Picture (cartoon, rainbow, N blue to C red):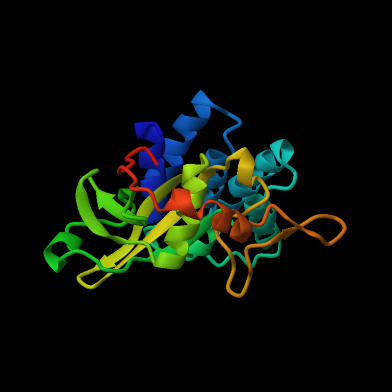
Length: 240
């Protein structure tokens, strides 16, 4: 990820919409068809009250990807005037649901968090690293500062995906001395799990079905088949 794109994401997560507009416009100069950038710019326009510009950006997304769920949802809300992102005058409030995409993103509260004096140094929008270690996913700041661990159920699922080639970005959403919440987004999906979402909705199982209703590409089955290899000692991975 380029430094400019990282800045653009951080400004969106922290609610600095004026800077978000400028940075995402710069990114579009480099790649006019970057869907993530177009969606971020549209959101920044919408939160800033520039509804016409927001609709234009979302329409550009749909011209490239007619089924893009983020653009479809938000352009509909803009047209219905039900967009619920709030602007308190300086653009610092945001409904983070507009940054989420079903199956590809998730807001996660960490467990076994670091000491309060470490947590207090974190800032909203800060990029964090996901590192596989001892069959868990550790979350690190600055590549080596321990922050916390993903819950076991989410961690086990993501380890399988990460080992198969999935990629993720993660950012601090909120932090106080005893709680850290991060925002995780799938940025690449491997061909092996092309039909498997990274994150499941509450109550959803991990099985996929073919057109005849038979189970296919079962993540649960694959986990059982690969159990022996999963028990190997993993080296920390810093490029996830």
